[in-house]
Length: 421
Image (cartoon, rainbow, N blue to C red; front, side, top):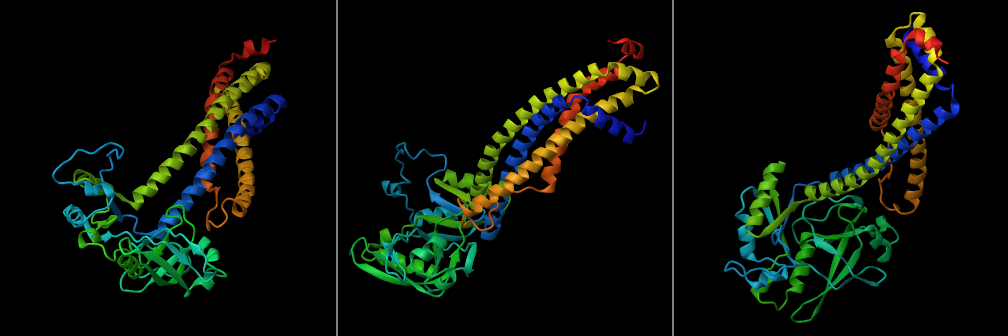
């Protein structure tokens, strides 16, 4: 008996009891659907995060803040001669910057000052609050335009897509080259200062750094100068964070730098690490869902065992006749193993096809509703590698589940089997 004959016999025998086989396939189908759908979501979200990280670039750039990352900020800190209560305001001074620069393995230091403004106005003159930061040399994902200047005195700003309509621009393209007015106030003199900035780009929405406008270096310095009018020099030299670039980009080297910063009373984290936390968090969530799918497959494997055991019992005389005519134990085992694999193949394929259909429908709905505006975000994605992996694993599970009844069929004595009633 050739392989083609074994496969044909298995496919034919599988449907001797259609109801029993159908219910077993449904059990496999449910597990396959759950796992395929979950992996599709995982692929879609991870793909989008990778695109965002790729668009931003400079993921190794480290943000350094005051306070150890292991420190509980809710607990009172013990007094020591190297640290005063002034550090409690969450700001750093020149001494802090000096200490950070003493940490080996870092370069390109940039101390960032607070650049808060009261409000911003566009062409429609409506006053809006704004959340923004001075450029750190990161290449943000833009819908239109170009990045802000990282040096010089040019007052440039990147705005977000929601800001376009709110500020009174017709569309993102219309905003390019137009002016917005930022109004800030000195904490000492209480005098308001109006600063005009040119819109040079509109940012795409991003889960990595969403909602922030970006100031050019020149605009940031103008805002800082206006905020600090009348302040004594000691209060002017305050920083919210220090940006630096690790010389060695390896994970072990970055970890060593972070440990050294912690020893000096600071915490550092790269954008890459922050994004990796997003990956880990989401993978943990989808991992739980995959476990539910795996539980369904385990339940389905018992159904495969039951179906094939019943098939062996129903076809005992047939098995005895085949063995009496010279069919080897290996061939009998192969027939029942093929039946188990076919159950897995049918169940996993149907589950995968339905998951793809539901995925396409959900992607269309998501693009028009809760994911509207997130360009390039396909919530559920399937690829050949993950699809074939799902089918392969499920077929392996059903094959292993079918080995016990297949062995029983192969070991049947032909004389005893022919006498079976």
